[in-house]
Image 1: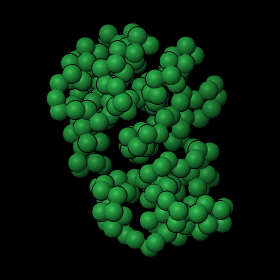
Image 2: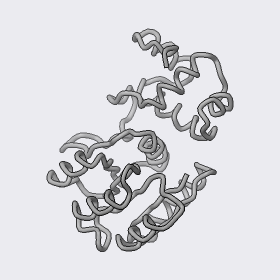
Image 3: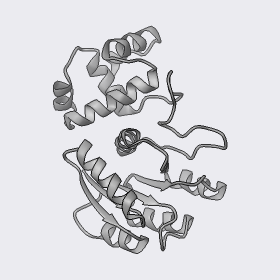
Length: 210
């Protein structure tokens, strides 16, 4: 997995890169400190699998930068990183271009989990005023549906397969399976594999169908 990460703050950029490389052994993180550098990396090979862009780095220019990066990386999952609330006009652009918004207040664990979900096609819209950021909920089930990949993992989980066996069947890394499991547990409000399968069955989710 090749991740493009652009942020003008060295501490943020280096910290996120180190955390991604530690949690996802197969990841390659290429970095830029401004928007022009990010565009250059997007144009260079090999291909980018997912891009994360700081909203306020030099050259970004808000919605204009999002539009330009989407044109440079058509079909590639994109996410905006920001320590500030998302302006309403930008939220409209993000929705139209299928771009996620990831607050910098996320924990490292939540960021990695959400990035994997973004790679699988999940879109995280900006939180509305007073709404907690996705991935920041404390206790209980998170009010978000399972992604397609999470449903696949849960389906294989119901067969009693180990993480290694699930990874082999889905052609993904074992660490990615663990991250999906954390997302499943968080969204269902459970604490282990058995509870996850039981919850799915009790709530009418036919996990064997996926």
